Image (tube, rainbow, N blue to C red; front, side, top):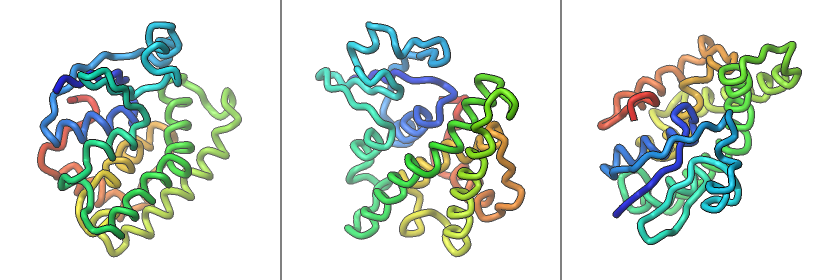
Length: 202
């Protein structure tokens, strides 16, 4: 199977896909996209994915998959990275949806503004609201992890990959994880998983 991933090295959404595929043992042909320079909006890429976003994964039969969590769901199904129990599987979906709506929209956006565009609160007046929303999400995670090793069924799954991707670089968006010991311990557990690789290494 030939898999071509249009990706951005520093994107957490792209990293999710790269990490899962690495842990599953699937080889990827990576095509790096400069998001800041607007490469995703050029006609040749829009012909592949009209939404103009990465990650975009092209299968060898020409099928195009987009949206990071949807790609993970496709490849994790019936593997160790997706719960088999029906309820646990639903809980996994729940965390994936929550990550994209309540977590990524604050933590990833603040990180992009500060880390990639070099903005401060003066240049980007949205930042205080993003920090407030992001800390609310981090509190939800911290409380959930008080008595749990991982997010679903006490085992590592794509729910953890999805939430790890931007949480482990949250400091680049102005977030301080000092007051979140359960999150920090969970980050270490994710990094200890077999075939774990950092954002820079895959």
